[in-house]
Length: 322
Image (tube, rainbow, N blue to C red; front, side):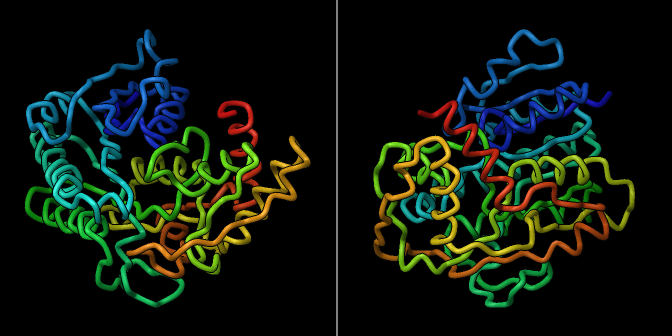
């Protein structure tokens, strides 16, 4: 069985990938500095002979070199996410997302890793108004974060052409699911709204609530990582894929779905009113992915739409985050 390095493996997406691949019998090494990830996300694997942890920072090349030694595949998810965070502190976002990614690519090259699958971002589409979003049509970035994720794609492309490092980038569209952090200034919208509703607080929607997103359940993301990692078709490698469902949901509709699901546990939640605040700087109005390329080249078939994904997520939030 193969050996996988998951950078950022203590984070939301990374820890879910850990669970999946360990259950499949793979050897998993996690590299994380716990700046945004949490030890409790992976501690149930401590003591498992198929799991090991390297506590370190991707900005340190020697740490990356050590982590890549003996690895078959790298699933690179260590990053500083969040558009607002990058606007407030572009230097740190660049250092982690660009410098750290470059360290991983060089370390993977030197260790002769078979393939690097990395977390790209739908933010790369920037000011492009084309819908649905197709991989080959992007606009200008609207935030430092978007710049860093686009630079990742450029570096991956260069490394494949110059050094023969195989890579696949997955442009994530608003991923949600269990273990997504509801706390802090840069919390993702779904767990943040869930906690507010559970506490009978009114969620604050930035703007009118008509902005829409292609919300993507974590189960679909796991499937894409696995298919990208193991793809054998040469045409499927050294490219980018949208990782999404191919469906649009407005923020207003999202909150209604959350209220419906949570009302099954607490009927009073159904009556909580929604508050609208100012629109957020750097946000794109609408996001909808074409997943035709992933379907064609990776045989990707989303397992969860927005309603099925929210149902599973809300059940987990209710049991674990109250």
